[in-house]
Length: 307
Image 1 (tube, rainbow, N blue to C red):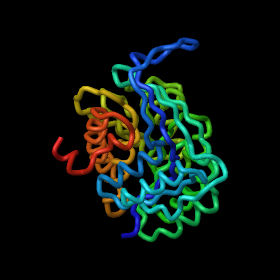
Image 2: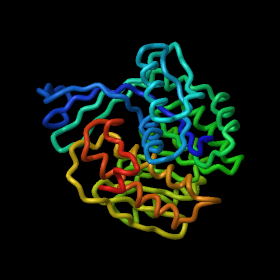
Image 3: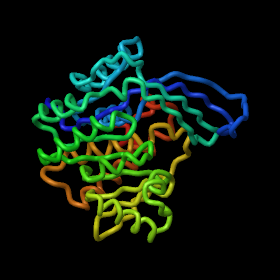
Image 4: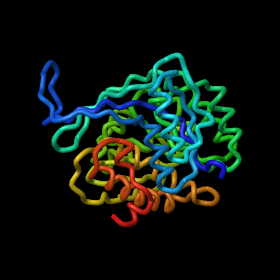
């Protein structure tokens, strides 16, 4: 089956420390445990979509190292097309993650090979996938490659979904090419200067993003769910109440689930379709936060239905 979802993906190895709380600058804490797992926003989004039944291709870059070998094999095991995952002289990307006792995390990412995705290769990949419905990008992977992939997708009438994480001014280059923009509360505030928990602030900030060229804005608000906006309406989608143990990959699972559901829609989606997809994505994220880690926490479709 030809992929219906393509992710311009950051592919990282996560080094996770669990501690009573996030340390203050200059502070040393004693932690509970450590682990090493595969992650990266793009990789998480791709695996999330694949486990939910989407046919997925990854456009990315890993190092010529054992971590890169491991990541490619892990994606293959998930049924993900890795034809467009290249090798680089740079090391495979890394992330250092601290998770506190409430499941809240703090993350530092070193891009490594993720910065080496060639823009022309991204354009070729998007052109060569005949049944493509959705292209997903974030700001952890090479922005020039994401920009070229989005431009090629737009020219083909393929839906583009931008996750503005980690928040950066470079996002403005991608907004005119993005049909759907997904930001968490921190990213929305950094991008627009508006309060994401104030309804008027969300509308004002979203108006800036619409003016830049996107069609839908989704602001994820943790336990308060998410707001879905188009140029004329705003809909609040509630979160599923659970006890969180680790929020790692929650946002990524939301984006992957959103892409998987939108890829099933024939033709251009409506706002009602986007709202429905967000409701499904909220259920997926609720499962993820009850589990530890990135890839290990991502559920299958059957697990979401049974939850």
